[in-house]
Amino acid sequence: MMELTNNEVDKDDDSKKCQVNPAFEAESKELEATGQGNMEGDSEQTVDNANKAAQVSSVELYTFEYLLSLVGENGIWNISMFLLIFIGPYISTFTVISYQFLGATPDYWCQIQELIDANWTTSQIIDFALPRKDNGDLDGCSQWDYNYTLAASLGYEAAKTNQDLFPKTAEVPKVSCPVRDFNTTQYASTLVTEFDLVCERRALYSTTAAIVQIGKLFSSLFIGYITDTIGKRRVLLFCPMFVLFFGLVGITAPTIQLYTLCKFFAALFDMGMYVTCYVLALELASKPQRSSIGSLFGIPWSLGTMTIAGIAYGVRTWKYLQMALTLPYITFGIYYWFLPESPRWLILQGRYKDAIDLLRQGARMNGRELPPDSELEIIMERIRQKDIDDHKENYEEGGSENDTRIEKVKRSLIGGLYQVASLFATITMAKQTLIMFFCWFSVGFVYYGMAQNGTNLSDNEYWYTFFGGLLEIPPCFLMWPAVAIAGRRRTFIALYVIAAATILGSLGIQGSENWVITLALIGKSAAVNAFSMVYLLSSELNTTKARTVAVGISSVIARFGSIVTPYINDLVGASNPSAPSAMFGTVALISAVLVFFLPETKKHVLPESMAEVEGMSKKTDREESIP
Image (spheres, rainbow, N blue to C red):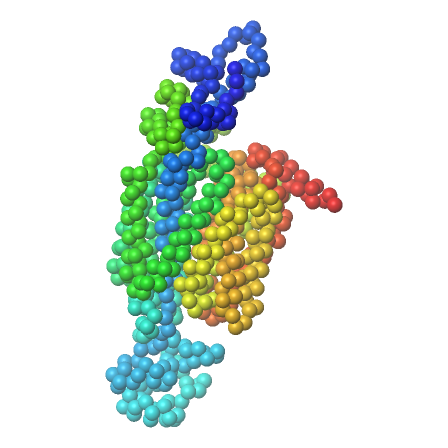
């Protein structure tokens, strides 16, 4: 009896027909006859090494990865599935990275109707009635407290020279604008001009961006449960429909509050779509391919960012722009005909026939043949049974499957609190957890902060956004070779150092906007790749039982980092355009220092216990102490 390997599966290159191990065929027949998953043997019988090897091999066959290897891992079917899935992150950017174009802010000033009725020109009104800031910029939020009816009767020249009636000194009071005018030469209309989102209402504009991150946060809390319940295909069919609906309803919103509410629901369903696309891509990828899925997902995201800049450049009316960025979600309609359900989900639901039909379709496209249905069903049954057994472990400590729903929820909450507490069970684990929490906050803070900082750094937001997306693509191909060679920690530190050095370095450049933008966007590119590293390290630094809750809490913390960035860019940047970049660069630098205190996980297996986590840290300390 011989052990079956992937090389042996593919050895017949001419026919591309996958042969099943004879040992597995024998076990399959016995399983069909007895319904048991283990080979029965006489206790007195001597089992030779070959039979033992075959038994180990047969166990390894009961995995979805083995089924995927039979279908093929790099064929036409796999490539077509990934291209379909990548539509998700490409279009998702239209909801997430569009607020600075929808809410572009042109020059504005107080509208003084008395002077307009007297046929004063805009330049005359600005010169006569509007104060200036200390740096000489126009103060568009206030006006001199003059008698404008009198000024209109005197005329511009007479009123301007009459310092007794219309003095311009610090003692003269200023009042807020009752109504404002906006410069429409660059933008026909924006959210800002539509709802007057400047001055004391500026925070409402920032909220239109923050609400997107809040929607993504809420979506992350329950999208996993929904996809596990109804399947990934249904989620990918329904979520874009809701994004389309709320995106179009937002165009007709009579108030900024209603528009913001529509934006929240659009982002909530958009995030559901994005996460489901990501998980489906992972499930259809082989083990070697999974390590690069995160980076590959960054490519359509970057292309989407570049596309937004082009669309926004050509569409300068916010309602038409909102429509142009919403209607592409119709594209997801092709999923109805071409995107199948996750075969892994079908197996776990016991829908073996549907899973077999799907895998056979993929095998035909890849030029392969699969074993008989009966053998595939046995493999699928073992996969499903293993998943059921794994879930039963949740009931081993003081619970049973017959518990009431309230008892199950109570036990689940207690178990969740225990898992959270386990993150701080030892000094080493507490240190690592707090450092990773800060790193999660910083990647969301720095990336989204720099992505939305174009108004403070550049006079041309279109080029800023376009080149920002373009510069994110090359690191997608360099990331994982760097991780393989330099390790996780060194790569993570390097990304943060690059981000901090380029962002802070851009502040010291005077008179060259091109260099300022280039350095700032390199820092943004480093930050987006740090997202991949923070996911990887969080998975490898925590035990199996605490891994899911650690990543879940950390992703929530990252959302808080991205939620505050619009307020920093819009409110702090209004008074000091360099301040946001200084904050983003400083946080990146602090993160680089903190990562130095994390262990290297490159040559370690995923830890199963707290002792293994402690051992990983001690081993790193010993290796670094060797001269």
